[in-house]
Length: 258
Image (cartoon, rainbow, N blue to C red; front, side, top):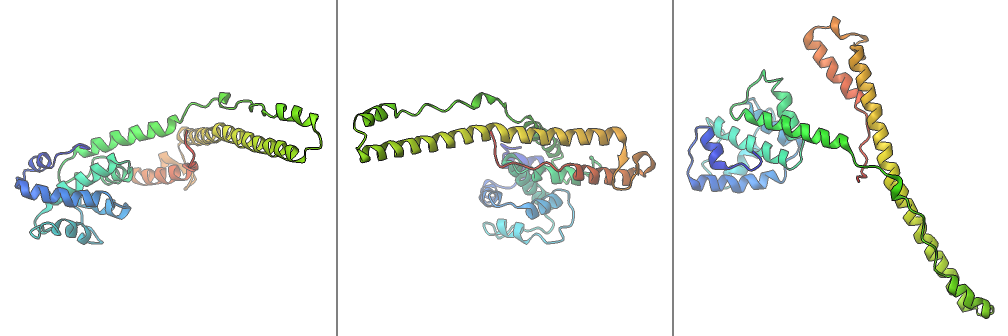
């Protein structure tokens, strides 16, 4: 749905607005897409599933009614759901993982159905799988990035100075050149080491997290309740498993990337 077509989405929902209406919806849609936050994602998900929106839908309704005064949220559940799922899909394609994660959680493993377009949940699962795999792959780490600093090219100047050792200006120039070369070499080596060390630290954190989760899974033990998951009601076990995994997911996200 990333390359969605409004006409197709409306037709799939059993709606047939005119081309002028679709054009008006597109304009408001583009404005909303650029400014979606987590609260908006939660509201859009509720609209998509036909749930009550506690905080109200004024921000959503006003965005579309600004271009079309006839737009209403009353008795208009299917069109609202079409617009909501299109916004969620677009936001997900823009890299906002919450736009996929929130609907998936709301679906409760397919036990709750959306108003329409259930295939979006498949899209969300697929997209999140891709992002998860990509985030765990990291980058190729090699110490070959660390190179021996280049030799400072001041030997000729020193030879010239030896012929006239009283030339203070010449000596000052040699010292300045040596200082600049040394400073540049230090910056270069620091960057090269950083380019290797940061990914290594991130990889170690990732492995530590994975090992902790593996032992947690093998043990089948609720760390929050300090008892086996097998002794818990299935609903409580699902909740406690989520809390345990949230606690185990402690890896820091470096701002550095290869």
